[in-house]
Length: 104
Image (cartoon, rainbow, N blue to C red; front, side):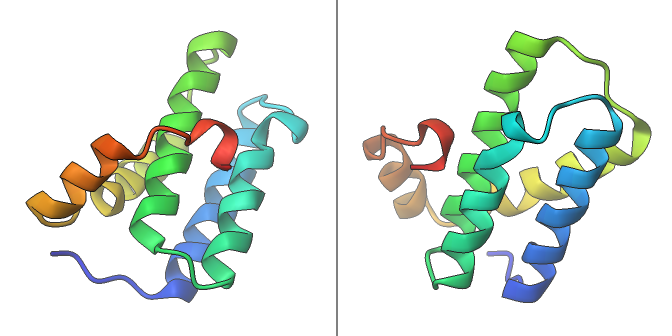
C-alpha cells in the first residue's frame, strides 16, 4: 500500500488545479479540488478524497472535452497512483460509496 503525506497530497492537488486552469478549465468548475483539499486538512481519508477528485475530473473532462498538457497528465498519473492504492477491503468500500459527485 502506498503511503503519502498530507502536505504532499495538498501540494499535488494545488498544482493539479493550477495546471488545469492553465489548460483552460474555469476556477468554478474546479471547486471539487478545493473541497477535497479542505476535507484532507480536516483529517478525512486521503486516498478516498483523491479518488473523488480523480473521478470528478474525468466527469468534468467528459463534458468539457479539453486537451491536457503534459504536466497535467503527469499530475493526473500521480493522483491515479494514490487513488488506486489500498487493499481489497478499501476497493470494496469504494463500491459501496456512491455519493462522490463534486466531492460531497
